[in-house]
Length: 101
Length: 198
Image (tube, each protein chain N blue to C red):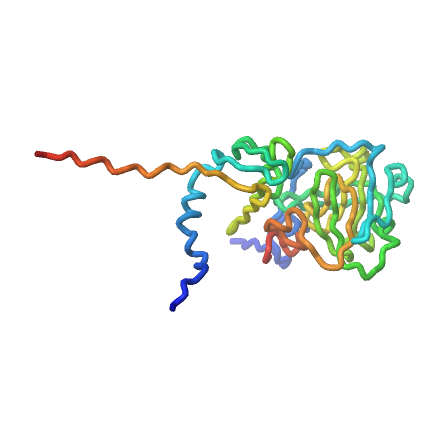
């Protein structure tokens, strides 16, 4: 019997991550991995006069997100968020074709 | 027609003696990855610790009682500003680390507020690093790291941890706050070591 591989390579997430990062992350809800507060990313306290961008929990000031931007690369650290809930528009059902008698 | 040459200095009109990619500023930009901690001098401590716990600690009066030095130095921020001839007063890390074995390879600087940055032991000894508590003749302001900050001016200034509270001795190098998110483990401005792989 031919086994089905347990995993596929990273290319598989290309579509999902492109969809995720094409949206406005600030309207996503996240949970602080330190204190458990759930809030919109837009509610975080962002420190951007720094070598990178640091978003902190508005309740406990723990780091939620760090983003460092080099000219040709970026690093994103989300370890301070235990999840992100990202609104994605539901697929629109195709309009019914008018039936012409 | 006269031909004006640049002569033989070879470097053109670049600002003299600045690391590559840097520009000069006269002000002192405030950079911070978090809220400014307000530390009572009654509660302030500087600790040198290893895996077994604290080896030595100094209170604020004890720090001030140590021999201090005046330091005049240029500083270089990885966000590309450099500032000339800044004046500081502080205690050399040679004094604070005098009881530490020479075989300890690295230190992690810890700050009030949670910031960390890693440094080779060789870069914080031999007159290259201080715990600074005065800037331009005044007590170091909280937004610039007061009551005391690390001063390691031969490396990019993110290594000069504001609000420093101590050093943890490490056998092997570990990344600190920015070093774990893309910034260089060492950070030599003269070799333009800004990011991983530079």
